[in-house]
Amino acid sequence: MSVVSLKSILSKNKPLKALTFGRKRAVGRNSAGRITVRHKGGGHKRLFREIDFKYNKINIPYKITSVEYDPNRTGFIGQAVYRDGEKRYVLLPKSIKVGEELLTAENAEIKQGNRMPLREIPVGTSVYNVELKPKGGARIARSAGNFVQVIAKDAGYVDLKMPSTEIRKVKETCWASVGEVSNEEKRLENYGKAGKSRWKGIRPTVRGTAMNPVDHPHGGGEGRQGRGRRRAISLWGKPTGKGQKSRRSKKYSNKFIVSRRKVGKKR
Image 1 (cartoon, rainbow, N blue to C red):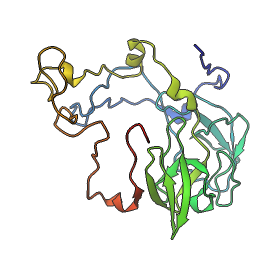
Image 2: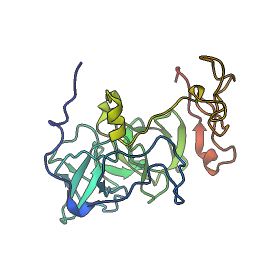
Image 3: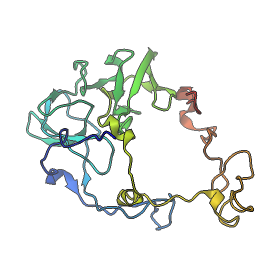
Image 4: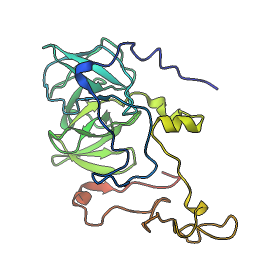
């Protein structure tokens, strides 16, 4: 079994104290303390890093001085030191090295890590850290190995192919970074034991078919029974899994979706 070592990729310096802070995690509970997302809780204590997703320092080059692990996200982050001396944490593209200089500008070079408006990016380019609304900060393609592809431009909008295969229109004045998010081999990671999931804050997931009928709609039956219905439903009776649609039919952003995501094995 081959093992990917991160020691050769990550820098040895400690997190920047000015950009880190402690915070009590919600771990799946709402403001009333009730569980709204199951299978979350516990895990190792984490320091939160303040990541710059706004990229509001335009036309000021910055140098990457470190490549660091962040326990709160799957991609690697790096210290960006601007020419004026300010330091910020940014999400890094893959194969970036310490010492490389990047730029956020309208006329920036089409180079991995540089950031510019979508109208300036050629069709066919892979981008990450994409804004959904102008000056709204990066929202799309932020997890390890993720990217969005620019496939067309028309009437002030740019068509983007999402990681889910959905094709969506976004305003051409929204900004995006060129490249793909770092740590693309994260999807190959095997936790190996239950204890590692608990370190990560992931609690056990019990199948509905293994429960009693009082606890889940799939529960009950003599021995190993199936769920007893054609389509899977959640604990609260909502359609779930198997490619079932859960998007609201009158959602405001429906008009921006050119092609819905494909589901199943032949995606």
